[in-house]
Image (cartoon, rainbow, N blue to C red; front, side, top):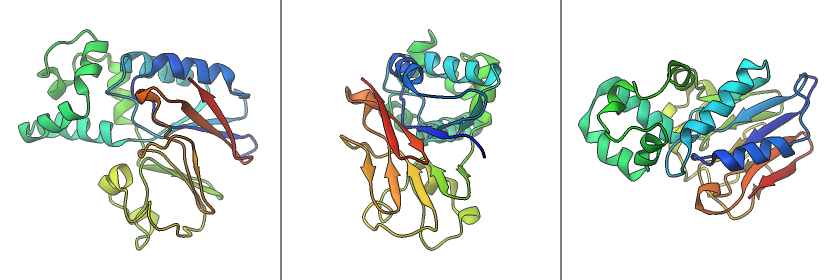
Length: 218
């Protein structure tokens, strides 16, 4: 890779903050890569606007990498299984806000996802469990230390906290992740967390690599 990488943390429907952040990034559309760490949906007011922006970047030929967050993972589990046991969990995650952003009032649409345009359904289906380069591992939540990357369970990649958070282990490359919100970016010898709680009134954060320079939108 010749260009820089800009990784963006949990957005959670904060489309206005995403637009502002993208406009602030010193981003070369011809050479650089945008990596989104997941959790595009729920809790915030405009999940549809978030997916519109990312899909537009793809359509314009920008090199975009999109990872799966736990919110998308659970939604797709419900979409594929129709298991009603999952519905209360989706509600606790703030799925009603996502439905409202699409003008859909009923959770019944979550099984078919027919309230979304096909482009957005295809977007969800294309999400990656992780992405790696020679220097970095990008993942939504974290890793299990005792397993090779290719053998990691998708539920852990999307949802794990401890022991990943409590033990700063060397995974061979710096791990860039989100999922657990911090007031400011977490920077340790082996890990960088860029979920800074945008949906809770805090900043939306991106990290520029390899320089480890942070960019924010309020």
